[in-house]
Length: 196
Image (cartoon, rainbow, N blue to C red; front, top):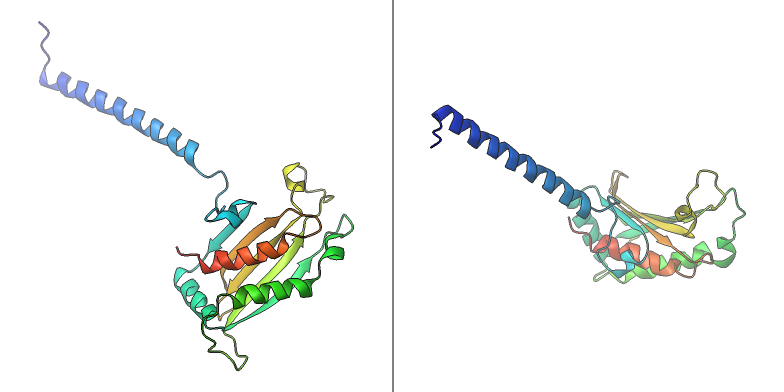
């Protein structure tokens, strides 16, 4: 019959504990790696975000809540711009006009207004968006994946100190821009449903 001294028995239990603990840590690490999102910040909260690559980031939950409330009260104004391709001649803006996209943006914003409190033109909420045309011939774009999308829409919401409190970027796929309107609408929906 084998008899263990107290010290040897304690060492045996500590050894078993260490083996089990190390096994758990390795297994947990593998599980996290398998299940983690390969692209941090990638949004898939609803179908219009999941159809193409979408990134979103909120920087101040409290200020975002205030901004969402201001939008429902009609206290919003926006600026827009475009970024045309440089290395390849721009073609996207032969098919779409920024003025037409601004109408889409205004309609998307108006669809969330429930009461108009800001009729004097002093709108405290500042929104900006731009349409980026993917420059396929850019020498920095070396992968096939970087040449698959036609461009993206970026929406930024700023506080009264002109600091970005929310930002979303949504790819569009049609090189003639037929899906840009839906991406603009999706960007506003993304902002108005953001809750973190």
